[in-house]
Length: 141
Image 1 (cartoon, rainbow, N blue to C red):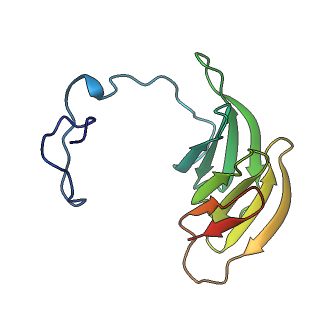
Image 2: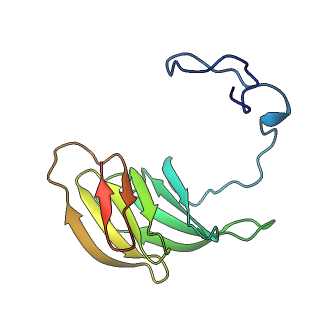
């Protein structure tokens, strides 16, 4: 049973709609993060919950400062990709942030906004996701 969608039967078909009802569905928007100039395609909170990284079709990553009860604030705008950014991932200790755009992957210091390294992805497909294996290595999918 999925408690979010108030259904008794299992929801297994990704091609069918799942209808949400009742108080489990958010009824209002708390904050609007409107600093990007195009669609946001991916977001991820830092592990300590104090920052949010948003990846956009505008070719930037924005690192937002998060304080409970306050409007999130832009801490850094990470620019340097030549294509829309499909995903981001925080290292386990939140010291590094990686971003993906088509065949390019960039490693950033989110505290300073400095681009530390660029990797080329040999595959011809766009990088769809990545995950840190530890604080020094990440995996691309």
